[in-house]
Length: 420
Image: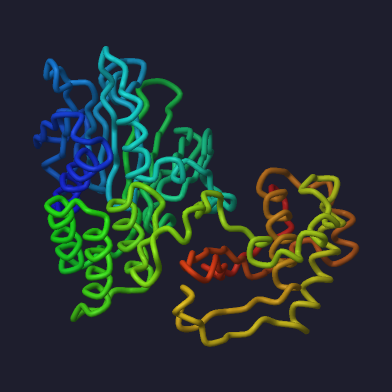
């Protein structure tokens, strides 16, 4: 059973209550079995429950339940197929945990909910993924939503082949999947499935845990500054090196836990120099990375079925141009938040990416058999087209500015055929 992150969560909440909420609440921390909340797991036998209580009368105001990310099945509790108590609602899913909130008769305090949402980055986690993971063709989908850390999938039974949890785990690496199997008659079967992911090394978690303990004892901003810098050095110098993605993840999490106001954490600059600094909360997109794309994107047809042929013509044109003018790898400026090696895509590659996304969206949502005859004449029917799909990220470097970089590069393909 992996409870390291749940133990860290206790420190995170204590720090939040102490610094951000000025110890406005009493925290009651306890461990319960997942079965107490109608959730069953062969690999997890303990769940963290935290009550926030009023200091005046010690009445519980809000309760949060934290489940380590694992495979869980729900026990149906009534004939209508409701799988969890009505008072229990999903609050957030992070890389490490599923968080539920237990509703009480008293309303949740606004300042507490605001702090919880900030600490666990709830708003960002509710932004639906633009390019959803393709699902197997033998699945009759009733509902499908994908978010940064989890997916919600409802399928019809019968109508779909037997869902293999292992295949879903492979399909959604690093994410949790809330799967509902809906029969014609009878109760809905719900379960959480853990996507395939490499765990963060225990040594790195121990560095994080120790830093949070120090932060609780040392409340000043300058002390937290020093803690952050020391943790970064320790994580970089671990005997078993972290991957760059794990290092970035832990540092981003620690920054959010330690600094509940957007302030400067770089010790080489005066804290007041960037008093107007505002973090970027919206997703990073192609026009952030290359603003001059804006005018070209306005000329690309919308993702509508009547524009499919025009988009295909444009795709082939941009594909030829991208081959003639590919991007290049350069040495990244790590001082400005870059990776050691950075890929600089060409304008043509980014335009191809945009057209490819629009076509992929169309094919995923529509039956394109109406174009079969015309596409066959031009040798397009049954043909598979591929392109590189880019996502983007940014680094805010105090004293220098905001810099955008390519985050991921993925080969995407679509095929012109019946049914899609």
